[in-house]
Length: 123
Length: 107
Image (tube, rainbow over all chains, first blue to last red; front, side):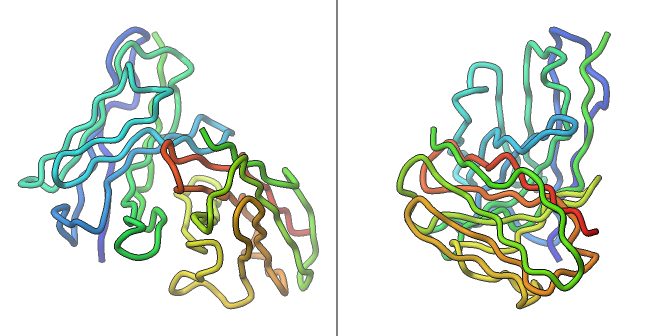
């Protein structure tokens, strides 16, 4: 059974960089059928897609965050990572990592999710 | 960006009722539409992919339909465990976008 687990600091100071890692177990990230994604959800609000990374290291970012976000992956460790720089209180959210199925390989959709990790931006 | 508008934002229904949530896209997304259920403190769960395909393990009283810009999500014979927030999500074009969510309360 595939499992994803987010890890990283739960508290980040304003203007600093938020860094999270997602560790994938029970399967390989080297799949041409899936993207590996980050999604965030501010407290009490809806879901926002941050970006996808593909096993070829191709990365797709949400333009709304593109200037502050960096994603990467390490297939040897079965991990992918997220960095958001120059954070403000508006970046306080639960961050989820997830697997997204490529539509070209079958059905679309985020089919596996991590449990989510709350990151609070505060001094 | 493709905007997804769900309706209603919230609803309350009784056990055994049938409820329908709609989702409208600002442009044609063919059938590139998924539906999720999210309970408090939990990650979303994929229920329906490609507008109408039920995911494994999802009860058959849940269904989805639609094509182009207008989609619907229906739960028949509502159960207490259906209390949750439901989201639609399009993947026809990047950035991937979600509806604002529909909160379903069981009376």
